[in-house]
Length: 209
Image (cartoon, rainbow, N blue to C red; front, side, top):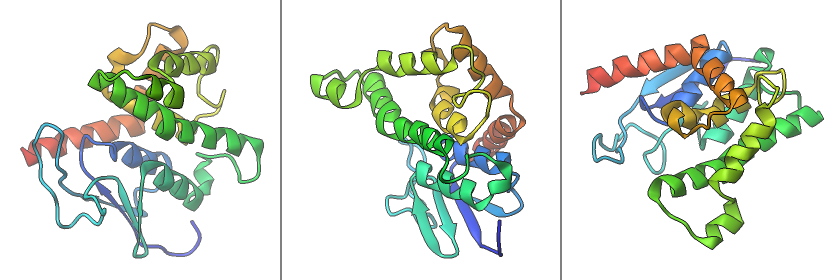
């Protein structure tokens, strides 16, 4: 990373910000990014709004970069990858590979997460299907990408794997009995950065209870 920057990632353990903590580790940026723990209101009613959280909706993740507050996982992930390019977690700007990687990130935010929320909520509607597609299409896309490939970008591990896999790290039972997908899931869960993030989160949760 060029120059000196003040970077603070606001993180609530066992939440969507866990994937950004994992990314910071994969970027070898733990010494450059301050991880600040905040409380959030959980869906089950636990937790609370944290006044120290700069997110306008008191959610996570949030990245404070030299006083500029950045929200949304995908924006933060791309920004961090650009700040720490030596880790090569994203292809270089201007390459077709970069476009393909961005495609996976956009797909996760624009398709996977809305479809997953609808599935878990038991919501079915033709408008959702036509706009976002359905769960079968999501899984089919993963099966095609991981049929004979180690990672979403073929033989290269990228930020796309961290972001797209993040939901399944909490709910592996949603994954089909497909060799390529199951092997990908196992590789993701076995990565040292993933293991450290989970262990740290579990320790933090115990302290907060």
